[in-house]
Image 1: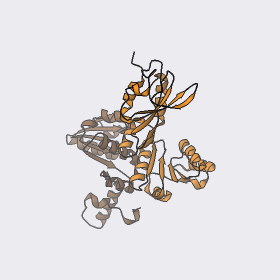
Image 2: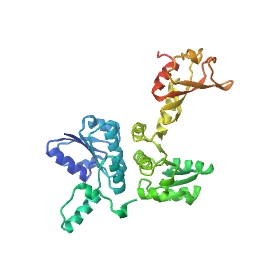
Image 3: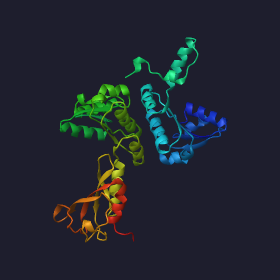
Image 4: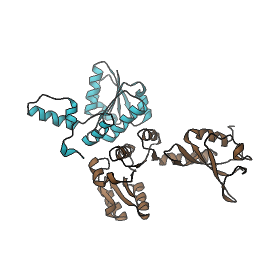
Length: 150
Length: 223
């Protein structure tokens, strides 16, 4: 599989290394060259310096042939915009977006995007751990509690 | 009408002033509290709020649900895109306008359903292009959902349109040359008998897809 990971923070680094270790072709897009140090030395990924909102950079990363696109920067709007470019303009079949704001994530799930909200997953799993419940499917953790709804 | 402007920079502030002066209800949403304070002294604090216009709670508190128009003019295209998209999908706002800073992003704005965009870079570029290369169509505006353009073109002496009427030109379908500006006599409505002259500035309405064909009909052949 050919995967593009936009954003080389902690999540992007871990995901890139895991997929590369399983033999997949991973290209990392990162705006800040110094962030690439996180990948270590023998990471086996291709690296493109630039923004995942920029068509030239996306094409240099091989988005036209990509099977999967992960938008993992720390900017929710940057992630949501690049994910939409990947899906609508380049027809990437699998697009995953990290969205910190649970409400924004909910709005874009309704538009058909696979959005992961780290805080919701973490909180839900901690709750299940302390209440001695088995861990659940991701949809259960994505449910907005009434207090959060608008 | 109730108009919400997201982004209190220069564009947002000047726009707010104009809209207020013609009697609209205006609220500027600005993330930075110092910037918000500064513009509040100019347009009144009741017309400014501090907050992140991308957050749904801010949107609710600002009354996105009753806004007639939402205008996103921050310096970041990703923020403008998300604000307008949420205005339309979450709050059913009828008109959402966005400033696009990088012209190459205009396509994704259209693809997610934001038809009304303004790109200063694009406008300045086409003005420069007009100076460098006469006869290039200069966009004046768009009509409807952006599928028709109003364009302006100045005829150079070598234009194939010089000495002809509009019926004698090979114009693309659904294209209308409607008005001409002449230095000595001012503006004229174009009829089928008017003969175009060098130096005329024509105003035409053209389907976006035919703009290139119109350019060929009016521009001189390449040397």
